Length: 154
Image 1 (cartoon, rainbow, N blue to C red):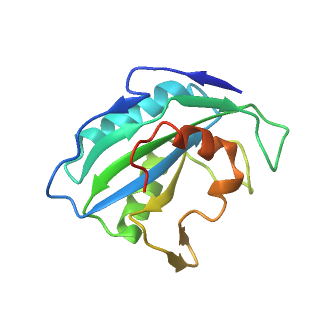
Image 2 (image 1 turned 135 degrees about the horizontal axis):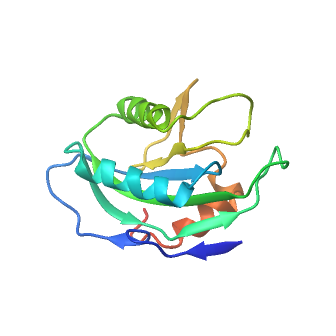
């Protein structure tokens, strides 16, 4: 494992009033220039008026799990404020993955970009397409280590 400190990873900004929710989004990927892609995702979310980026972690390079015959992954987390609902946030994240050419060929397959809702306020939410908090966050160093960079997590 290796940590990378890039422009805006890590990043910290003051919270803003006017947003209803605070959430943690996990970023991952292992195809192409993932670190550059994370910067593009950060800039896109930061420019979107529906969000306010409060913090990001450093970027962690770590080995894959599940399907292990692939390149190492890069992972980070981002704390954002939004007024979107959990389901609308999920739609936004899936659309963003698609814009960055995410393909879902099989479970734990290589990917250009993976965006997950790790936490959304302090809610517990269960739906067939979305579970909050993310059900495996405690088991994944790719989430736990980047979360160490986030202050006032919960």
